[in-house]
Image (cartoon, rainbow, N blue to C red; front, top):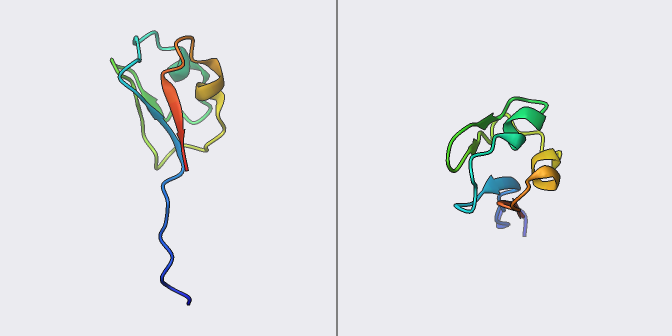
Length: 65
């Protein structure tokens, strides 16, 4: 039936394993990541390109959906 599906969140999020090194902030083409410990991805600006995920030195970024 149409209209009864559930939307699943997609994209990436930063876990508490983040060490605040800022590598993801520098590599993000949209400047969608706010520096911190942990850093935070602003989903409304994220392209879901995976640059942050692929370049995190401590694997603190996980994929949703």
